[in-house]
Amino acid sequence: MKKKRNTPILLIPFFVLGLLYVTDSNAQDSTTDKYFRHLRYNHVSPHVPIKGIHEINNEEANNDSHYIFRYNKANQLVEIINNDYHQGRRHPLASIAAHRIVFEYTPELETRIFFDIKGKRMMNVRKVYKEEYKYDKKGFKYALNFYNLDDKPMESNWKIANYKWTKNKNLIIEKRYNLENRHVDISPYFEFRITGILYAKNGDPKMNYNLNEKLEVQENSLGVASYCDIYDKQGNHIEYSYHDANGQLTKNQWGYTFARKEFDDKGYPITETRYDEHHKVLTKRNLPSSARIRKADIASKKDTLEIREKSLGYLIALQELKPDLMRDVFHQDLAKRTLGYDQESKKEVIRETTYGQMVGFAESWNRSGTKFPPKPTNMVEILDIYNRIATVKLISDNWVEYLHLIKTNNQWHIINLLWQYKNVNQYPK
Picture 1 (cartoon, one colour):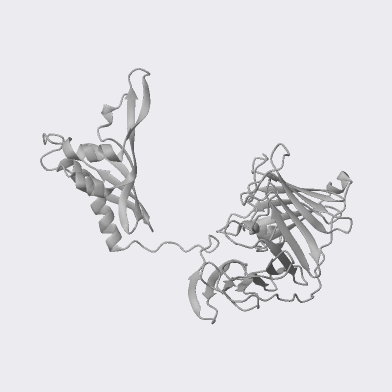
Picture 2: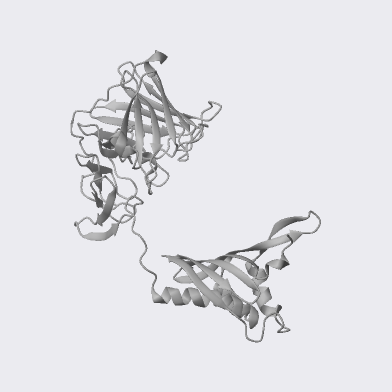
C-alpha cells in the first residue's frame, strides 16, 4: 500500500443556492411551466439540486420526451412532471422513477412527495415515500430524512435513513446514517464514508472527496480518494475521473480511470470511451437510446431458413416421433394455447400445453401412425421477421396455427403457439 498524504483543499468559493421561503398557499395558485428534455446528471449526492437541462418550448414538448418544471410566484419549484419516455439506464441519483414530484415549503423545510400516473402515492428511485430537506435560517440545506406512508422514518434502498451536511471552507461535508444511527457508505457499491462535495461556480458538482475523521482527503481500500465531474455549457455530463490522494489518476473498481461521453444536439449520449491512467483507450461503446431508433435490417437468408426449419420441425417431431427435435424447436418457456369447450359450464375455455407435454407427445402420440396422412401437408408462411422476433402461419392437414419465434443465443425457437382445428365444424356454435 502506498504511503498516503493529506491533500490540502483549494479554497474555491462555494456556489450558494438561493432558497426557498413561502408560507402562503395562495402563492402556488399561479404557476409557470418550463420544459426540459433531461435532468442534470448526478452521481454525487441528493444535496445536489435537481436541475433541468436542454430547455424546450411547449410545442417541442408535445412531440418529445421531457420533464415539466412548475414554479410558483416566488419562483420556487413546486412540481416536476416526468414525461421522459426515452429513459435508459441511469445512475439512481440522476433519476426520479415517479410520474410526479410535489414540493411543499415552510421557511426551514422542503418536503417532496411522489405520485404515480393515477395520482397515488408511490416510492421514488430511492424506494422511499417522502423526503424532507431541512434548511437553516440562512438557507443552507443541512439534512435529509426519509419517511414511509405513515410518516415514520425509513431507510432507502441504500440503507440510508438520513443525510447530514455541514460546511467546511469550500466543501459541503456529507455523512449518512441508517435507522440505527450507524454511519453508512455513499452507496452499497462505492466505498466512500465521510465525503466532501465541491461545487463549481455555476452550481454543478465538481469534486467529491473521501475524507477521514479529521476531514483530510484519504484513499479508500482501492486507492481512490476522489472523483471529478465535468459538464459542458449545455449541462451534458461529458467527463468523469477517479484520483488518488495526490490528485493523480487511479483505477476505480471497474478497472478504468476516466471516461468521456459524446452527446447529440438534443442531449442524448452517443458514445462513452473509457481510459486507463496513461490515457490509453480501454473500451469505446455506442450508447443505445430509444430517441435514436434504428430499424431492423431485412431478415437474412440464414434467419429465414432457420425460422422455416424450426416451424416445420414441430410438426415433423410429432409425425416422426422425434422428441430431441421437439426439444430443439421449442423454447422452454413455451406458451401453447387453443380454444376448448367445458361441458359442465357450457362455456368456451382456453386450454394450454406445456413444453414438457410437447416433448412427451413427440415420444408416443403418433406411435400408431394414424394421427396424420401417409404424406402429411405441412405448409409454412412467414408473416413477418423483425430483428430477433418472427411470426409464422403454419397449416397442416388438421390445424391452423400462429407461431411466435424468438432468437436467443443465436438460435431461433418457438416461444408462443396459438392453434385451432382446421375443420371449424369441430367447434360448437
